[in-house]
Length: 256
Image 1: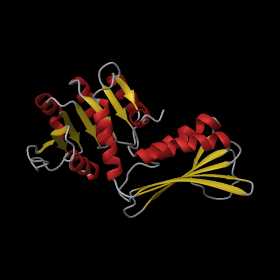
Image 2: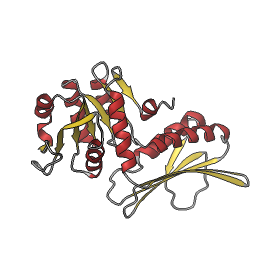
Image 3: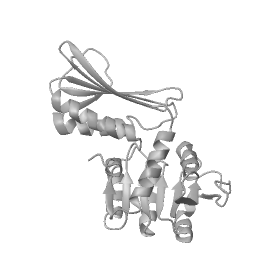
Image 4: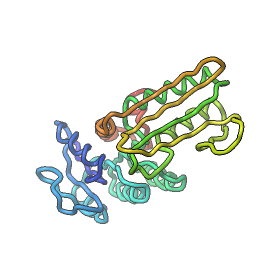
């Protein structure tokens, strides 16, 4: 039985991860932490613990993997606590700064296995592959990236959109990224980036390639966060048997 701990247990994603975990025959929730709702039942045997007690909880419950859906500062602390307790990781938090990513990498390497991804949807990981293929064949086309999320999402652009930009740059070179446009200016050799925050949009991503007389749009829409939760469960099952190191969702689904 794979023993799972969860941070951000009472958030949007945490709640769905717990629902998905309850359906698994080979996985068991042994701990859930959040900054709110201490003592609230999460499953038949587990109640929410305060996030500040993470080191104590991980030591007591001895999980095989920690799934993290929180916010960047909390996630860094959770990763450090997990590595200190030899707990493997699945990190779905987005919005990290470069130094935060470096801190996590240094803590993880040689200690545990970790899957870190801005998006755990299987469809999005195929979406990224299609974008790479299109960029390779449409190098002279203008490229625009448009993403839309709910009005409570704090980071912009989304982690998924930033991953798109990195994929594009591998083919197009380290060209300028322009976030939105204002005033009178001609489009140069650039990647346009546009972020929408409205209503309860789960997650839409469009990459538009436009050339003379034609355009190609590659689009992914998440209808439910359950797509992310089920992917995180898949990653948690996979990472327990992986060698130490940092992996992506592409490694989990075998798409590279």
